[in-house]
Image (tube, rainbow, N blue to C red; front, side, top):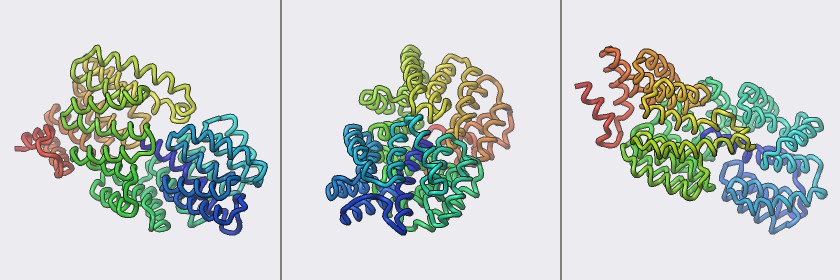
Amino acid sequence: MKYRRIVLIIFIVFVAASIIYGLMDHRKVTTSSEKAYQAFLKGEDYAYRLYVREALDEFERAIKLDPNFAMAHARAAWLYKSFNNNEAYEKSKIRALSLLDKVKEKEKLVINLGFARADQKTMDIDAYASELLKKYPNSLEALEYLTAKYFDERNFSQAVEQINKIIEKYPDHAPSYNILGYSYFYLGEYDKALASIDKYSSLAQDQANPHDSHGELLLYLGRYDEALTQFRMADSIKPGLYFVISHIGATYRAKGMYRDAIGAFLKAGELSLNKENRANIESDAALCYIESDQPDKAIEILNEIVEEMPDHLRSHAILGGIFADQGRMEDALIQLGIVKSLTAQALVSPQGKMMGEVSTKSAEYYLAGKIAMAKGDYMDAAGKFGWIADGASMPDRAYFASFMADALMKAQKPDSAITILSEALKINPNSEICLRYLADAYGQVGQTKAQREILTRYLAVMKDADDGLKPVKKALALLR
């Protein structure tokens, strides 16, 4: 989910940013109305800031002022797509494409390429991109397309190379520093990642997203209190952004503050752009209920999600995992059948191909691993969780590494568990689940001193946790 949000940011922001920068010297869009043009520019600025509802309002206003404004129809359409309003998307797309004979050549290419990407039509993307790169190889649009392409493909080294070309030409191009930060993060170059986000913040001081991006990277690195400071700053600048509230929830969850986390996730779900956003966020709330030993409440949320969205893969997998933990093997296997069917469908979809095999199949491997654990097939479970961890980005890598380690401990291989958890903690030294399982592993091999050191670190992370959490009570008891 985290990675998919960045892909959405790239799609929404880069087109807006290229148009804004292209308008420094002359109009880059075709309209006969100055008022429509000003409304459009205001919409682009909102989109650039990720204030998508306000952006859509301005694009709709521009269309009312000039019904023949092709790029305004296109920009509105792409935002309708992000809201999963497919009827409005198709209507605006048809209108935008019908007006292409009224616009300039590059504008036409940008519109066609944007719709090809929105519809995930690979052949059309390649055709329009090739034409754009051939005719305008050094344009901001071409450079940004290549950046987005490499990022989509998870070729982060090439993405960094393209972003640096943009920065060389436009040194104050704030969105590029944002994507540069995430690219460096996924490459494991964390100092460069934070430096890039700091530059983003300095160029966009009045915007919420730089603080959200900064907080997100700090969250993944285990610097939770610093992350909360950044998220709260983002929320003070622009209250009610769903992704900011969701990140606050994720930080509370990392600190064991499950009551606060659940409240934040449910609020973020209400503010989200579409049903899929909401389902993803509410399934995070379900995980909080599981981790705070309230599985029945998790089941209730997950059942509500799959009733509204029967094809929500993640919720089916989590639901099946609860059933496996509870020994309800028949119900768990039913969920596994559903998950396998949905995974097979997703793998052949354009979005599944873009996200890759690991992201698409992780739900299936997760549930299969949970079922294997319930059956006592611990090495099988370790293999499945390890497959996910090997291909995952942070923070999912540490999360699934901990599941793998738990399986290895149950298979009487605590030394292997210690190695895996120690490696995961190099990225996030404050991962509560990794610390908790590492303490168990040291206890299993009789390394009491090391166990006590890890338990002390664990309790420091959980200093603000909800009262009565079983893992915290266990840690305190072991330290007495």
